[in-house]
Length: 128
Image 1 (cartoon, rainbow, N blue to C red):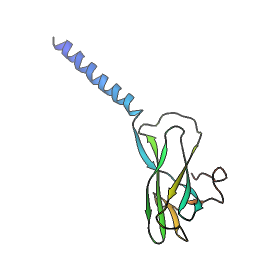
Image 2 (cartoon, helix red, strand yellow; image 1 turned 60 degrees about the horizontal axis):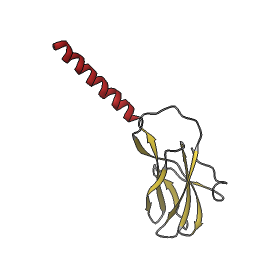
Image 3 (cartoon, rainbow, N blue to C red; image 1 turned 90 degrees about the horizontal axis):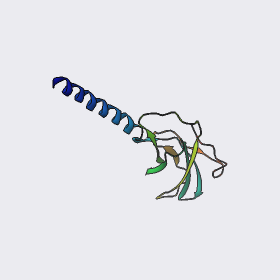
Image 4 (cartoon, rainbow, N blue to C red; image 1 turned 45 degrees about the vertical axis):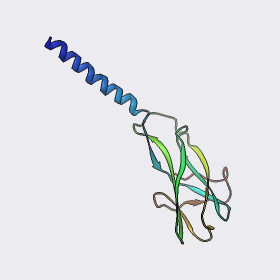
């Protein structure tokens, strides 16, 4: 009887570990990404970020001050990395500002300067 209980405990623990490992392949968390941008008009910016295909990216917040605009563009990354192609997917978005951009600088959510593009995507280079 004791042996059966021991084997059952090992089977349950092993099942939980395997289940958590399998589930972790699908768990994702948001990661700030570097961005490139271009003015669409005085209050709208086109934004470009790059990441792995099929994971998805979005602008989650825009912070504006009199001298800067900080765009928090986040992409979903897997908690447990899995082998995948080295392809870079371009995610193009638009941001509407509360005040005209003017001479304000644009930063990504990590505080790095955004790359100003001469024109809209696809003539814009995705920062790495």
